[in-house]
Image 1 (cartoon, rainbow, N blue to C red):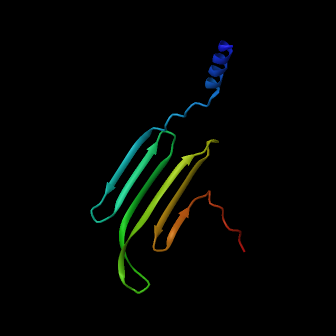
Image 2 (image 1 turned 180 degrees about the vertical axis):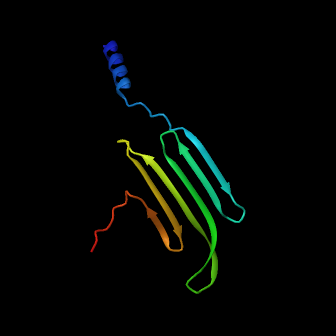
Image 3 (image 1 turned 180 degrees about the horizontal axis):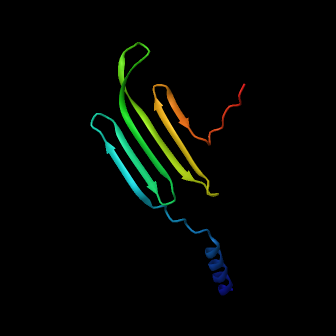
Length: 110
């Protein structure tokens, strides 16, 4: 009976899904500017890439008073399981988040 139990335990252990290996980082850069701007980039062995730059900009608020905001520009890309590449670029500024990608559905023409 103990042999059957040990054999069953070994079979269950072998059937358990293996932990996937962590994806290796090939490149990682970060630069923080004293005035608040920054840039960073990362690239992994599975083809994921992300880059972003933040710049300080003075804008006027609702009361027409100037204040500093961070304007962000960036992109990321990856390849899906079927081998199709995907890329998204974006800007985030006083006008909101503005993504651009062929993967974003387009509204039908009126």
